Image (tube, each protein chain N blue to C red):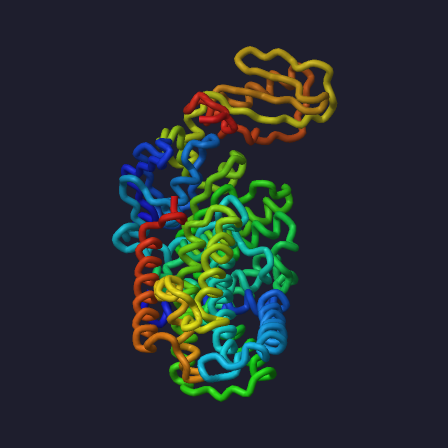
Length: 257
Length: 309
């Protein structure tokens, strides 16, 4: 297939993946909005007023960027892991495997689908945040870059999970026991300045800390880590995961007999 | 030009099971080809390898002269696969499944939509275009998979047990469609089937695979000529109580109005009819018995087609 045909194939896959989550919007878009509203009411409104300021801003403003990025992370991951594993389980992944789509187009198609959901939910959650806070985005370019890179990284991670998963349990283990704890410990609700040692230094090994802080820097101009380091980490993770997905698909692990 | 050339194809699974043991197979361009074999003989593995769903351990596959390993994308573009099991997302509308499949092959959106409408019309699914695939009957689902496999206009259509579980009427409709596709559009068709009458009715060439090896590959006519005996079914004008005895032929009464006749290949039938007439048996019509291929299969492999390899 030539480049134009590859792009058509990629676009078709993106369309399919987007339609998949849009068709079930009450399951994919609404719940994160409700959850975020509850976070703002409980953590921001009820508890936040007693916390006062964190990082020089009201607590409600401090947690808003983290909540948006948390939605981007979990939804990008969930979209690809569920869609790719279902495709494997129902065997309609074979529709793609028999086609002349390149491995890269296939990966980018699923990734773009995950990013579409991550960004859609991220924007929806940001709209909820706007109801509770009076935020003005500090750096739009950085905010968009961090959101896009984060959703791409977690879409690819979701794909790797799905490739190796053999049961539906296997696709819930990583989000439940790895992703959620790392997100909560990644500084969504607190600044690592508040942590005692050795937890503060240990937190620096959590990659999500860098993503959340880079996004917080973009939105409210406050970060616990250097933004350049965070962006470097995001780019590195993106290329490593992309290369891993291409390698694994080429080998046919978990897909071809 | 050969549509398909398979040389020394071997597949050993991780478990140590040798599914294919040096398969050699050639399918001429424009042919209608049947690959027959008992369960577990390796039919699906051959097809899955050809469709890039299984990686061969050794051997060579060429489609219209293009090597599968070296020109995989080109080969994929020329092959349409109808697998044995339903493998589409049941929650997606029928037309979307076919149109998106065309898209995965790089077909432009408008052309893909037109092709989808044409195929759904041809396969009697036009009124189900917007229905979710899971709402279709078994026969419709099977036809949906054929439409999907043809979305990108393949030159070689590969069907794995295409009429399994399909009722007789639908099966004949599908045969008609495939025959038209082969004759009018020149699409080479390779099918595996358990229905030997299907192979006999549709295919010009047959290969039999057993324990991962091709036992025989020859034109259908040539194979049938190998049968030492030929069977006919005679519908009688008047019912009879017992089958008459005629030297040199075997007659058995299937029911009071129907006789089964077995004669040696090449034996003149007029002698048999004269003897029947003399015995007071009047024949209204005669037809070939359709299990000749089954008999041939048993002769060549020593197994019935349903036997495990």
